[in-house]
Each structure stands twice: as C-alpha cells, then as structure tokens.
Length: 515
Image (cartoon, rainbow, N blue to C red; front, side):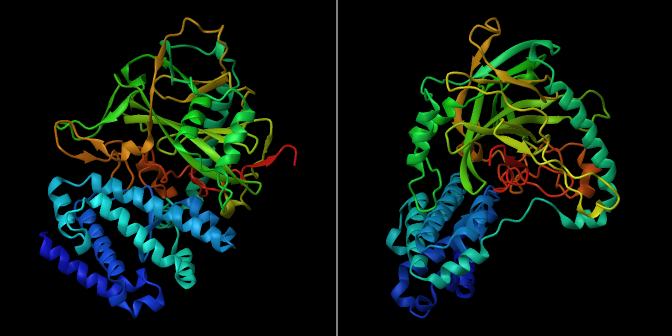
C-alpha cells in the first residue's frame, strides 16, 4: 500500500475515532488542538503500517481508543486501588511507557521501505524527524492532553483490560468438564514424580552426561539484605508505592539473586545459547556459542504490598524426541526462573516455568504456607482448579551465596535447588553467561540483512516450536499447548485459568507463615 492510500485510510479512521484521543471540551475545538490531531493521524498511520507489515508485538495490550497507552495484567490489577489523582497520573505514565516501548520495537522491526513510508506521514511540524523521535513527542502530547480531563481518564481505566490466554469456545466444543478429569490425573502423576525427584538430595541424583554450570558476573551484587531493602525503599518513592529501581540498581539486583544453572549435559541440545535469526533458515535457532540469560522485571501483589520480581530466561536448541510418538519434543526449549523479593529485601518465593507456560512450579521460603488444593470430586467438577504446585521449600541463603538450580538433560526439568558452597563442586566446569534485557528478543537482527525481526510472532508464539501435544490438549482452551511463547502470554494451568504474570498469583496460592 503506497503512502497516499495509507493517508486516505488514516484520514477516514480519524474522522470516526479521533475524538477518543481528546477530552470532550477539546473535541469541539479541533483547530486549537492541531498538534493533538496531528499526533492522532500519526498513530493511525503507525497502526496501519505495523499491521500491514505484520510486526505487531503481543507483549502488551493497546487500550481501545487510546493507542498511545498500553496495559499489562499488573496495570489492570492496579485499577481498583487508584483512588487519588496522583496515583492515576502515575498509572497513565506507566501505561504510556509500555506503549512507547512496544511501538518503538515495532518501528525497529519495520523494513526500510515501511519506515520511510511512516516518516513521510509525520506531522507537519516534525517532517523528516525519525519515527522513533516523532513517537516520543506524540506520546508526550497525547498524554498531556488526557491528563487535563478526569472524564477521559475514567474512560481509559474502564477500557484498560488484558484478555486471558484461553479460548473459551474450545473448552465448550471440547467438553472441558469431562476432559479435565483425565488431565487432572495426568497432572497429579507428573506432580508425584517431580516431587520425588526434587526431594532427592542433589548428590544422589543420577547424571546421564556431564554437569556444566552457567553463571553471570556477580561482582556488583549487594553484600547484605539490608542493602537490598534500602535500594527497594528508595525505588518505592512514588505515588503507587511501586518498586521501580533505576538501571544501575536493577543490574545489582539481578547480580545478587542470579541462580547458578547446573545442567546435566548429554548433547548440544542441553547447552544454553542465544536465539538468533539466520537469513537462510525458516525459524530462529539457538547459538550455543553465545550463552545468554535474558532478564526482565515484573511486579506482584501479596498481602497488600506490591513486590518486585526478577525474571531470568534461558533458551536451549530443542527438546529432543525419544520416538515418533513423543508429543512433548520439538524445536527450541527454555526455562524462566523468577525471584519474588519481599519488602525486607529477602527472597520470598521462587517459581519457574518452561517458556511454553508448562511445568509451573513454586519454591516458597519458610515465610509462606501453601494453600492446600481442594479435593477433586464429582461435586466440585464445575469448580476444578489446578492449584499451585509447591513440592519443596527453598533453602535459606544470604547475598554471599547463590542458589543452584539443577536441570535435567533432554527434558530440561528442574531436578533440585540447593545453596552453592564455594568448597563444593569445584570440579564442575563453569560457563559465564552474558546478561541481556529480555526486550532484545523482541527485535533481533537478521543475519546479513539490514533489518530486525522479533523472536515472537504476532500471536506471541515462537514460530516452529509447536508440539504435537496441542492436538490432545486443545479442549482445555490453551492455544498451541507446548509452544514457546512471549512474556505476558503464558497460561500456566490446563484446569482453571492461571497466568504467569497474574498480579494476584501469590495471594491465590500462599498465606504468610507469620501473619
């Protein structure tokens, strides 16, 4: 589609929708709001070009009528608690930052031709300005505009929602209430087997290949939990009492709580690497010569307090097949390890999942007590819920120690977690991983081509990682069960509904040991 056609489409859309970007009093004074209207034009053009070029990023969700604002599950979860003007303004700022980040990534993934088309549609006052800079200016303009209208703010909060990652129609067609019972039995069997392995001392676990350890540079780690708490207290100095550390603080926190990943290595598919695009391959591959760990922060509410979470994501080339009937194997595999920090600066709970959302497992500290699951009976059929799997407590440690996470070969299941002691396991080879922001996965360079491409498709799936198990589990409503997917799109339960980024996840799974 050429630029004149795009401009015509944008103009028609604007006539229908631009008032959604303006407060009521401004909508009748369009001549006095030329910059706002110009930016509205620009966002419509941006949306059209992004859709045409199939570079939509699924990590955040646009707020209908306000494309310069995006939401995630955490921001949606905060809505009921916004009772002060200053809190609403802070919430809008965070929403605008999410949108700006997502749109910047999408622009970076455009082809040079599409980027030039977008540049040609810049507002008159910003002609020939790079799209990323126009985006920043328009975001600020439109955000300032909605701040002036409490009515518009209420409409924004009402419209801000994130759909869950389940297809209800599949559950209806697939007779979910009936299918859930045999699946519950299978889940219980896996829990029993996994619990037995996790309760086995690490020294007694069988080793099929060679143990190999992966770690990051921890020189900048904090020396005490008191230092961590002080850093978190400083980061909370905002209207939402939300821990938002600066970049330097985040780097120190990630170094402080980084796990040592100890992998039973039998073949190259057990090596941690870095996703990359090659110009001659259909799907992204894992370069095991560059072991990376990808980090991002998230937040969760527990017992009325917003807590900071540190996420560490690694990737393997594949989960190898054992036979033609193996429904769990496939291209690429990965694990997310998460540390939730208490307000006191100490780890409160650890949890993990494979990057498909599968095998979600909690490792609480002694500060938490798991809420026991209800019995599965015929009477409770309509209320079945796959409760949090919490097989063992995490060991206590101090900032001078690291937690070792033992990972099995081939399946890449977590087999053990224990505290690393410098005098132990000195003969295990150590590989240093480079820590990179998770967002780099959303815009990776394509080998030998002058453009970038996301690891994830528009529907948040990593192309080529689909598993055969999806044909068995579709009645449970999880789209493409077993496929690797993008942050913010991880359904972690087959029975009931649960998401890895649910802000109330801990409140639904644990209670404080000492309330």
